[in-house]
Image 1 (cartoon, rainbow, N blue to C red):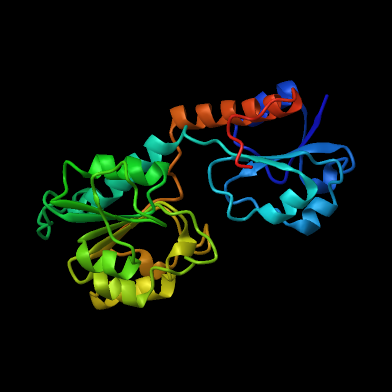
Image 2 (cartoon, helix red, strand yellow; image 1 turned 180 degrees about the vertical axis):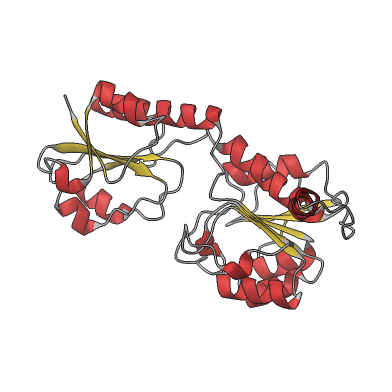
Length: 299
């Protein structure tokens, strides 16, 4: 059977399915590197030229997720190695979580839950969600799904992307700082790249303002985390809903505040999404080794 390598343990939804069809090795130090033809890992997997040099027979990198910012695509291209992701199958779940985090911040759901669990009852007033101006940064598949869910709440829906989208009715704002200044809720769904790492900085947060809420279900790298902590502590913004962080799984104590709702990178963590993701990883590998184009091929 074909040798497949996972750099670290895979989810229980995926590992048995791979082991049925391939010879699965976990950990590069325990793998026959000269025979490994496929590399499988999560969306935060790091793949660079040095790793590829250790895997001379590698043909495909199959990501269990949609993020691939840790993968050197130029190095893959130089070797003719295919990159495939689980596109489409986790979009709805990530978008659902974005809306859930936002509502939890506005209505202080987590903070009120803690008060009631501790035997209390009297809590501060929350804020209305309906009628807010909602800005979405990044209008790929997930960004669009977030926008569609936000529209029934929104007084206005705005978005920022690399270019305006002719097939959506929402207002395009080219500059992220200007987008933050014109919305009450800033939802991050952009893929990180060299141009937007730390893009949500002190200036963007100041533009979002004291009534503004930040929601991040994309990557922690998009946000200047120290600037976000300072903005929350000073009241520069009203609150944040965060599923991703700068140095996961490390979450600074300063983010554990009543006006912040925290989630441990759980955007795709539903039974349905993880089953579909596992099936697509297998489908990507099987298609490639059958000489076909993987359904989630990126390049």
